[in-house]
Image 1: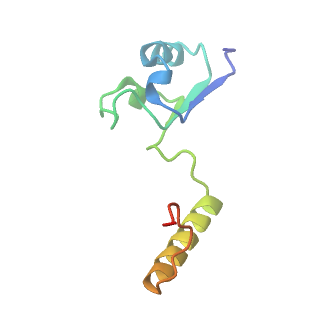
Image 2: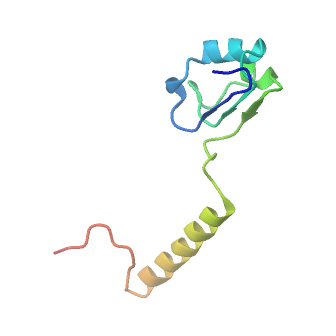
Image 3: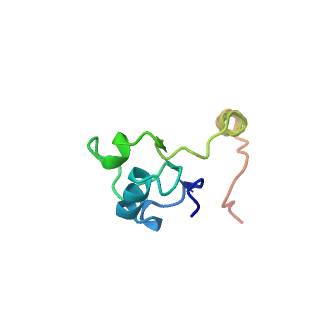
Length: 96
């Protein structure tokens, strides 16, 4: 990666060699990292990532947007109301 590059991992922790990433961040070989997955979860409080000023660390929710939450919660409320009325929506495995 270029020294101006940022590594973003929202997939799986083990996809990235954490030891190598810590070293790259500490030496400024890359500009920074945004992570919401780690080899060990939850991330231990004493992990080197927590000491770096060029990392953004999040719980596994880096994909979340306000618009996505609005749809998720709207659909959830609709699903519950319809189920309670005996007319479920978004049925994944209907009986045939």
